[in-house]
View 1: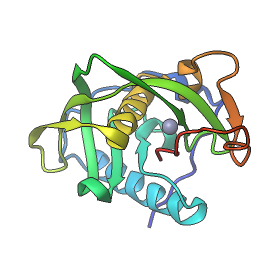
View 2: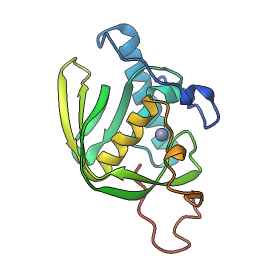
View 3: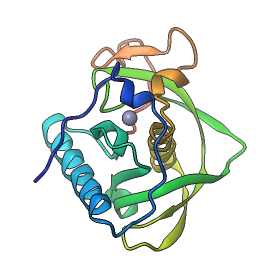
Length: 176
Ligand SMILES: [Zn+2]
């Protein structure tokens, strides 16, 4: 078990663009995937939520995300993920992030996306994501470009503390 410390909002590493992964089988890549999975599962156990994590959140500036999304049968790493196609429509939702666990941010995301990536065995894959998975992948891929959900806030009122949400009526269910 190698759960790592999660970098929090304000840490300059979270604003950095990550480098492409060249060797999927390289020991450093294997270790990064294992640490991401362990950190994600540890976070879920402690906080009761969490379906995705990006390598820069544990201080590794590599283009790797780890997704735990049992509803779609997904539990694994997406290496060098990129959005290939986007739906024409967007949706609005309250987003959250391991790097600011107490804060919710109202953002706009593409409703569906097609994502290309390399899996843990080195195989190139594409996935068409909708619903929660689409939002999750957009959030995590943003991390790899040094973009946090706070930068995607729709306006100056698009912020709420967790636990305060729902007090003023309709709020979409958390996605992570
Ligand atoms: Zn995040």
